[in-house]
Amino acid sequence: MTHSLEKLPVLCIGSVLWDIIGRSSSAMRQGSDVPGRITRVPGGVAMNIAMALARFDVPCELLSAVGRDAAGDGLLAQARARGLGVAHLYRSEDLPTDSYMAIEGANGLIAAIADAHSLEQAGDKILRALEHGPLGTVQAPFGGTIALDGNLTLDLLRRIAKSAIFARADLRVAPASPGKAERLAPFFGHAGTTFYVNLEEAGLLCHSGFDSAQTAARAMVERGATRALVTDGGKAAAFATADLCLVQTPPPVLVARVTGAGDTFMAAHIAAERNAAAPDIALSAALTAAAAYVSGETPL
Ligand SMILES: Nc1ncnc2c1ncn2[C@@H]1O[C@H](COP(=O)(O)OP(=O)(O)OP(=O)(O)O)[C@@H](O)[C@H]1O
Ligand SMILES: O=c1[nH]cc([C@@H]2O[C@H](CO)[C@@H](O)[C@H]2O)c(=O)[nH]1
Image (cartoon, rainbow, N blue to C red; front, side, top):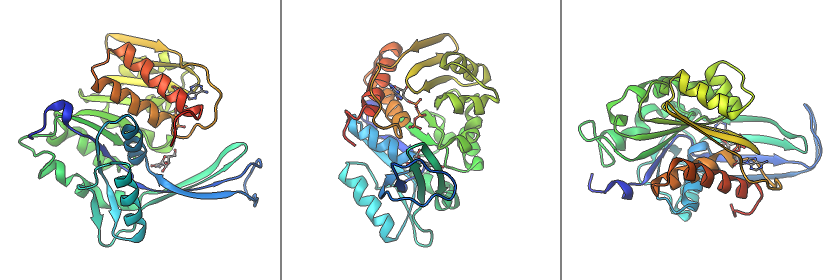
């Protein structure tokens, strides 16, 4: 690699897809058929993290699978417009671009379906630039920061946790949904990994239930996390390592939106640490940025 460490882009590995979201101001239940709005926006956890990193002026490269179809071309255009690197995306001839569909009523998320089959089928093809260059090789693995999401299959995540091509990386992992949280278990015991989870996901990963982020972050470390950040909406969040546990509360704000809060928190924390912020400063920067995001202050 010719880059110096601070110049390396953050690699965002995982889902890059279209989110199709139906929203209604009515309270909804199974079988509801109500007026509302339907939007199509770029999504997938890796894409969300990359878009949030770009808002903090952190350069990133997407590693994912995107079809050679109109949906894929559209996603690439959206990524390029935000300055995200797409040169190493795997464009499949035969797999369609993935998508996610959610229904949100006045009473919150009613249901969602994530169709990430193409990413799952592409498997380790999405990692070619990390194995055969130019981002890294087995002999000279990538030494920068990697944000990895839990949309990859458990088998591939297990292989990544043991792989030489990830051995020098500063690995930041985030679950894709509570249903996929346990896919991140292979990173317990992995020295280079930082977990970013909410309270529910920490409970799923630790096979327990927690009533505070502090207890959850300590339990994540007990379970084998080298570093764990646990958020809990408007309540206190925690950062724990083997010899440290910091607890801070986000500034109170009026909540205008919540989806994307976790990705904003993670991106702001990565950006702060990239600027060599101390642990307490990085945590407070992340909490403040995510609170501003949920209050609607941050443009999308
Ligand atoms: N009600 C709130 N008031 C202030 N800050 C909030 C609130 N909700 C979320 N935040 C900010 O966002 C961070 C992450 O929130 P949360 O724990 O809800 O993440 P998440 O469940 O991963 O979010 P999502 O899945 O919706 O993106 C919090 O630590 C906080 O900084
Ligand atoms: O299984 C998944 N569920 C949800 C997401 C993404 O998370 C966001 C919603 O929380 C949304 O952008 C969706 O694509 C995903 O990538 N995989």
